[in-house]
Length: 172
Image (cartoon, rainbow, N blue to C red; front, side):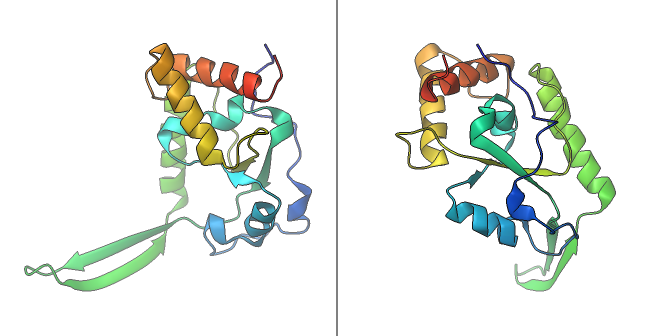
């Protein structure tokens, strides 16, 4: 079975050409993300269950762009009647971003997956026969049910997902 890796030596997608500055835009609003969506690339899910997905996805069907986006936190205050009195948006600090990344990498380590490279937005292409990334994720969840594997970021689910993706991409 093919190796699982983060593609640390893979260059970013050429669609980012010349775009290196940090921006206040959120990830999905970045021009390169919009362009890549038109080319049928889907952003990898950012939820804990799927944090390993780019690691097991075949390298020929994954790419990445530098993360030059801003992650925003919205804080609201309400009065005793439940009415919103103030709203404040602020970018997460570098310390908060590092904390979140450390939490993800701890989860990956517990699953036997090495820490992911920081500063990347991963994009994936589904295998032939699937019209969306959501359909592939549904297939992986169904395979976990069928094989009695817990749907969580754990070594068993990582291994099952890798094997299923190799089969779907006809690599095994």
